[in-house]
Amino acid sequence: MRDLNPSNVKTFNKILVGVDDSEDAQLAFRYALNRAKVDKAHLVICSILEPDEINVYQALDKDFVHGQRAELEAHLKGYQKLAQQFGIEDVQIVVAEGDAGETIVKKVIPKVEPDVLVIGAESKKGLKRHFGSQAAYMAKYAPISVFVIR
Image (cartoon, rainbow, N blue to C red; front, top):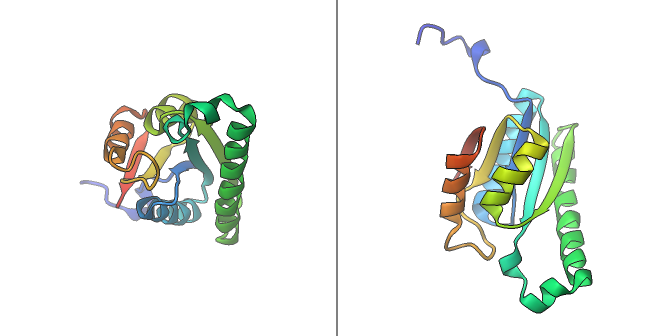
């Protein structure tokens, strides 16, 4: 409590935000935009292609999986464009495959090396009933600070 000077507030150089189309993820995206702008940080926008959203026949069809990934990448480019229009110069997108929480913690964070992870508390996709546990998993096991936005 000795030094409450606002200039000593922690800033972030690289912010990773996990997005889907859920309301909480949209709030997380907006928070990450504002934080990246204030901190003049690099912003990495990530979404996970989850295998439980694809049936076994679709999973065996490489064209289907490739199409799903390409669709998700195109969707993330929309987020990237919004971030750039908001004034964030350095914006990257990442698509990964697997369980959302585990993939972000074990694959995306080590690859991207962000200072902080920003996520929503709930998901609109297949893990809706479990995503609170996904957010809790990431908050518990991520080797970096995690902001869970509601």
